[in-house]
Amino acid sequence: MPNTPLEKQVPRRSFLDILLGVGVLGAAGSALFPVLRYLKPLPLEAAGGPVKLSDDDLATIESDHFVIVRVGPKRVIVFRDSTEEVHALAAKCTHEGCTVQFSFEETIVWCACHNGRFDIDGRVLSGPPPKPLAEYAVQTSDDGGIIVNMEIA
Amino acid sequence: MSSSTKSNSLLDWADQRYQIRGLIEFLKHKEVPIGGHSMVWYYLGGTTLFFFTIQILSGLLLLLYYQPGQDTSYETIRYITTKVPFGWLIRSVHVWSAHLMILSLVVHMFSTMLLKAYRPPREMTWVTGFLLFSISLGFGFSGYLLPWNELAYFATSVGTDSVKSVPVIGQWLLEVMRGGPDVTINTLYRFFALHIVVLPITIFAVIGMHLVMIQRQGMAPPRGHETSPRGMPFFPNFMLRDLLLWLMCLIGLMTLAVFLPYGPGLPGVEWELGLKANPLAPAYPGIKPEWYFLWIYQLLKEFPAHLFGVEGPEAALGLVSVIMGIWALIPWLDRKSRQGLPTPGFTDYGNASILFIGYLTLKAWDLGGGGGGDVLPDPAAVARTCAIIILGVAAVQIAIRVLVYHHWRFTTTGAVLLQIILHGFFGMSYLLAGAISFVLAMGVYIIRYRGRERVFEGAKS
Image (cartoon, rainbow over the protein chains, first blue to last red):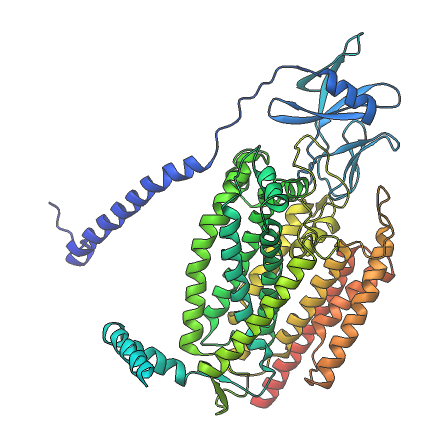
């Protein structure tokens, strides 16, 4: 054993203290980790495939000009503008997460919570939202059916 | 005679086992300071505790019928209010008492702040009080979701969404709070556990600490009267007055709960059950959080999408955190009052914060903006109307402060009023007006601080 000066040697007592500290931290960590991991829920099973709007949804578009549907884990607002073109945007406002709506009269997408306004392609027109709404690809069939894809348009 | 011996023997029995006489002696000799300022402020902690007790009792009663769940939360609350005998009353008492508890707590907090009751040795009483305030806001926020109605759903969506602005762990925290990326029934389960188990256990512990500190140290005497010999015995004099006030609170609470079971009809202070939450329905105009969160809600609205490379909501919540942080640490920031010196700057800060929060709260109510239905209120008219009201309040406040309390420091109040005037009457944006006022106030502080240094140097030489 090399000759270490006495003052540089770790005294037995502080060595035991360090050992105790590491032991306590380790025990606390091994108890805490499963709890922290347990708190965070598993990601939702993302059904990423295209979603065909039901007859009820189509009827809602006829009456309200828009409908909000679930596509996998996301909520998507589907609406038909005055040129009969169908759009699909993320329905969750990028500001504080309220659900947006389509105003047919003003041809804008509007969030009632903090008065955020988007154009029909999801770009921010005014108000506090920091980001545009994601736009999704839409296919329309001749019989009036609407299919929303989860790919960003 | 026999009854007195009986009670004495009971006392002896308890005393032999638990040394209870010492406690009674302690309470008999404990005094509440009188003189210096109105004693009214000493009762507000007690009324808060009273309303909290009502919350526990009425909450336990609600638990007998309430069932959390996708198909039961809303339905059982509706069942309680429409079918269960006096169920409407129990719910009404729980809601009214919640609001009155927060109100009493807020007034208690501001009064202890303005009277500088946080001076040593009572710093930790202030800190535990601040914790109680935070936990109470947590109670309000978590309880709001439990009826699972539309209003609750959107208010919770917005409220929890702001958590994502927390640096580093924001996204993790958001998912842990919501039990998923969005507000769902899983969020309600978590909030339910929080509301009826986690928060009660926590608040009992902190209330215990808060009360032990107050009993050990006594009520804070007004500054300059620390050695005042005048006092009122805590037991029985002060306690009986406390009980009388509690009785009056109970009568007031029952009157409100019976005659206004769905709230006073003010926007933002209404608790009609409304429609069941539907994640696929759009938010509707007029969605607002509870009145004590309105100033934060309005601040979120005032911030633009981006500010100095930070997203608006993050900047707004950063500002709220700074304000709250300063508030929690006041006992250490107010250094001169630690030495028993007057600190008019902090008195002014407390008074000004009432005006600052008041203006934002009124604006959140869209006062004087017209609007209603699908018509949006006119923001400029709202800003002007609220500015007029707050200037009126400020005039009264300043008159009282000058004439009654002989205050002479109004820098922060001046800055807040300047911001309100620039924004309300000259159409300047809220943030720009605030920045100008802030810079001017800082300028005044720097000039005053330098002037003081010069005086010190002059005195030295």
